[in-house]
Image (tube, rainbow, N blue to C red; front, top):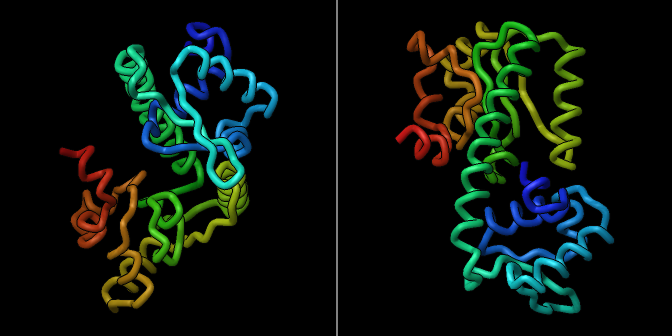
Length: 210
């Protein structure tokens, strides 16, 4: 929709990036990696947005950084458009992710951790409880790593193993239960058996629930 409205896919991606990260500055190559567009196209559209007063630039340590121009008279209206779209896209992505995980097998619980919630102390980045198809799991993790551009640490255990390790106050399980997380699927708390998992969800999820 935005590319039709703004006349360019790259331009729409740039606006989405800047308006949903309005206090952050990006240099050109960082932008190309983030929005996955060609550098020439990015340079061209940055010049267009700068000429319209929608972005500003500043040189730092030999690099030119760009960010949203909050003083632009168009900023408030564009911010509303792209913030609303970003929220809708996030909901759609979360729903798609949950559906993909369900197809892995009999999944009782799944949560994004570590890298996904910006917690460097977490031992893992993704946690799944249930019986899953190993081939599908491998494909799923490979896709997450491709999107994240990094190797991810993950853990999968059966519901019985989860319950046993939790009752034994297993050190790894204690860390998992205490770490911030974005819960994608949770059928454990519905039975009252996942005490501790619910209270350790990430701040983002708690805000969303409010």
